[in-house]
Image (cartoon, rainbow, N blue to C red):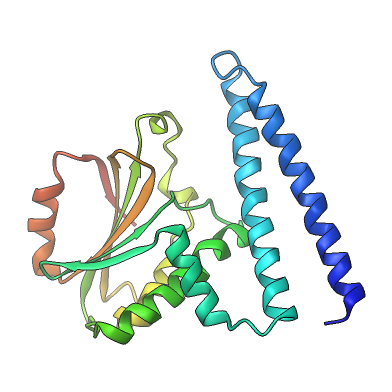
Length: 219
């Protein structure tokens, strides 16, 4: 990549970082009790800008260095804390965040790319079952500090996450083959747990989660 182009992109990143610093300063000076809506708007803006910066920095790395995208994004998954494990016939994928709102392309890319390559690396050492019929449950887990910001399921970006998972675990992501559910739960930290299982296991899974569940619906 031409040095002039690199410099322009670095300057753009520096500008984004300055805007982020200004927003963080505004958050620090906002009275949450008196102006909760302002705080929510500023915090959301800071989070989205942070993810935009990360995505732009990734592209700069891929286009200006010999760093391999699969290795980098798998490492990004580790840094983000994406966890994949199988427990009693249920594959559980934990994302260290609540899912973004729809139509936030940069925001979704921030998590979907590392998720894809984390699943790819996991599948190299752990053969994954291809489901013909299954249940996929998105558990949106809110900490005590976040419970007042619980969002409507319709506003969350679920399809792109499901598409990534389907590429590794499902023969087809047709609604005829998948029963998909959303649950709202409480926990120690904000995160999203995605559980993939055979339909016959769902009732047992639901029973074990009853104490945590605040709401459940299909979609």
